[in-house]
Image (cartoon, rainbow, N blue to C red; front, side):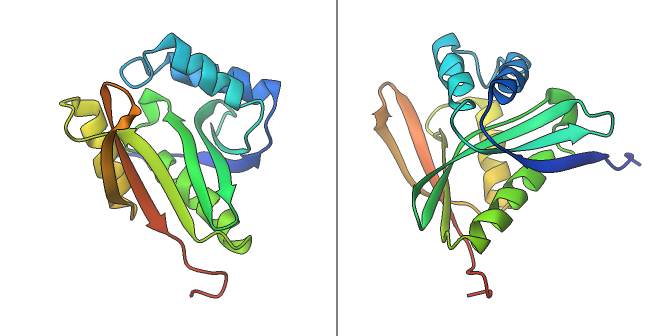
Length: 165
């Protein structure tokens, strides 16, 4: 039987420290984040976007979710990264759940994410899509127009209102 994972989740503001944590996590995930120019943009975004941070019981950063509010009703998961040793232990679901709870109290009605589309054979991203489906996201469109030469899948999850509506 696997021991239950001990971790804490907290909401964080954009900062240089968050950028450093983001860079460290992305470095551990070359199969998902293997493009240096894209990684540099993600790290820079941690200086401007709010997020949710997961830390192990010994305070080591083990997961990050950065989000961008596009409209009052819609927020995008800009980046989510979980340290490989912590995959399949509830960190990703806890990060998404924390951001959902905060957004619901602020009137947001929709959370969306972009990921590598299913027409690409990458097995790691196949698991990413399974993860998002398991926590309630549904695919709405795959396009080659957003990331030229790379299929982008857009997925969305509707959030209940502050009173369950």
